[in-house]
Length: 241
Image (cartoon, rainbow, N blue to C red):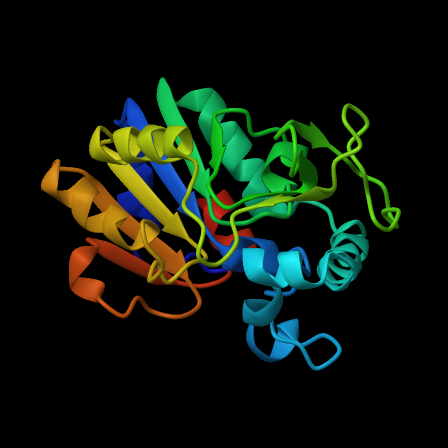
């Protein structure tokens, strides 16, 4: 495969960097066959994701919401990390100060071996008790309906940041610190239009970082990045190493 123009420039920046932050989105998981679960791909029983992934929907009909999440879990359970996920694990091992921020909830980054990681929108393989708030891993497929907390018998919910909910403040603080102190910011597989991720490129550039975007679709504001490479994450990201 012929390398896209711009690869050598990113390689050179990474080779000289001691602090690298990476932001990933749905595009990196799409190369593993994970659907976006939004728009046309996310339509399920005539429901859109935006109608189900809310606290109000769960309060109104928790069984319906859990049936949707069970359907998602069954799909994701068949997927494995791709070459881009594994390349980021290698980059983590090479860079002195590395942090990975993902908007994805599929758990493919930790499955690949990423450890310096913020899953800012949660993880579909974790559940949280609505009573005692305990968070635990749960990989049951199918998940029993309705799942109850083993500690207090409270109703469990997906450990996901739903529409209308705030990000975990610790995750947000760690992510903002990583973005504002990095020398290179890689934005992979996301248009970066959802906040707070939408502010990361500008924040990194204000701090003097080199910002590179890898995505099939160009950013809506290309002026906020130093370099854009159009292509699939699974092909481009390994080439950065």
